[in-house]
Image (tube, rainbow, N blue to C red; front, side, top):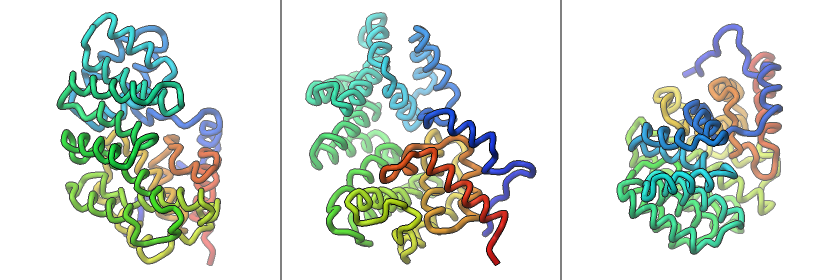
Length: 328
């Protein structure tokens, strides 16, 4: 099935989009305009915008996780949440935001991990149905903890939301780092994990693309260990029989089930565009770049040690040239 065409008159590699990408870092909020507006209001001292945002989000757990983790990355997130708690002691939403913000600081070496673990557990007690404080703990353990603690936090997330998008991505990234010295191994455990999760999810779940994430995260690990070229497009990682099957299935899923409403859909699109480009499928990659627009993500374009915007722009321009001027 051919990829969907771009609207007439629009080019994926337009100069104006290139200037926009060069002018700013990757926007973690992606296309969530409500999140961007609330974050801007909080930066101007109106923390009540965060309260309203999270109240509106409700139990849309993937969206709640996206919004809380993006807010938690901000340098003033702990101050926002602390001011909120002063005004509303015992607020579950404020406690969750504070816990995840402290996780972000701990991962930067600015907080003591054991105290941050306790904060996540305290937030979880205030919101027992919410997977988000457990996601915060999973983020902490994925970066600083043991395999056992990482799996335990992941299972707590899944008890509350079995198809949690961000949690599955974190587990794939952690598993991909195991046995880096084994080199290229088509039977590595990360592939089995991703394929089981994709098979267990509903047909329209974006977890169908998790095997692509596993393929890419394993490339990151192998490239960092000098087992793969630093230029992902120069690697044979994407062209083996298993990799080609993974990418074909993922692209076919996207054509049939594209999730316009999922808060992290651009994360998946960036992984799929990256892998499809590296495999050499220019037409399919061009369609994905068009869908991504300006919503570039650090992962995977920064792998293994690259400027994400430059890598994205170079790949997009290469496939645009290839589609316009095919080699005969």
